[in-house]
Image 1 (cartoon, protein in one colour):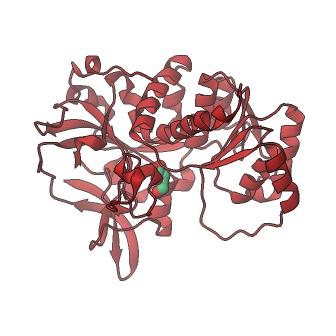
Image 2 (cartoon, protein in one colour):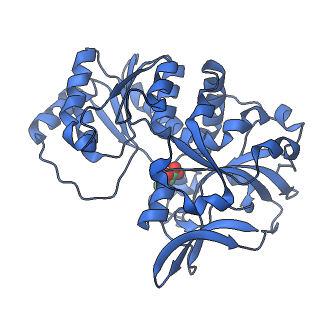
Image 3 (tube, protein in one colour):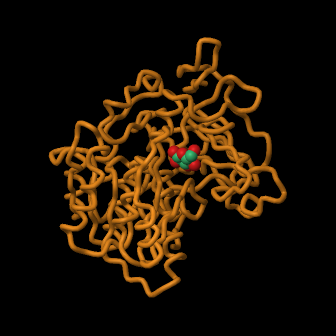
Length: 390
Ligand code: BGC
């Protein structure tokens, strides 16, 4: 079967297409999934271009891709799935340390040892291949109605984990959030903005994309406010002060912030912008060694005296995937067609190795099976089998 892999050789690493053996059922709980579509994100770009990630132990090749949508091709008899079920898969697999209470309790996203693996990213093959095998416990059912945007379940799970954590944290007080601020208008920023809108929050998005960009248009379509970060030429570096100024012009307490750019100086400015009793979630990273000159006493004072909470968050749990699939359906109903517009660049598996990430408008997706053929592979009874309780 065909797979997109990153390969290590004496001359460096390179992305290409490999012919790998089709996986087989080995256990009663295993499932063989035929891959329909795989989303590509900044982590894939870093794996392809910057050597991020880690090969499976003892191997010089790794199948990439971690945002998957597929259909069950073969189901082990104790898997609880059947042929034709639409599924996505969790990314992270637990470490093997018996002392890691989080991995031992289904929360590998809070692994304490760092020895977890992540399919398509760290030490395990990903999903950008014609088929993959997986233990049923790491698969999540996707209703048929969500097929068109099912590959967004993984990035949406990242947003859901934050919202879930924020609700737990904010039980520390009586919290009635009204205003959200999103930094960045990439796929994650847009999903965060849509989620905040569907939660009824007045939402502001601050990003480098131009006011006339599709990103800005989508933000406005969902009833959120868009503001382009001013000094375009030098990225955010030139304008970190202006985020604060912009926030001041709005004149409202910012209750919840999602930092989705990964530009660390902006994360520090966001700490000043988030309001009293509010939460700032940091979701992005970029490689580098940026040094900052900050007013540490002032920042420390604000964090303490205003009960501010700064939350770092990575990866997500099964529950976050399930809530995410539910939320995507809600967003799709509330803002018709918007999720489809987030997926701007579609390509075949064969085209992935020549992807130019700089040219991707918002979100790139690799269709392993052309969407016109999906319907024939998805079981007709599938839709009725799942109901989501959130
Ligand atoms: C993925 C996460 C993963 C993280 C770190 C992100 O792109 O969405 O699932 O945990 O990269 O590897």
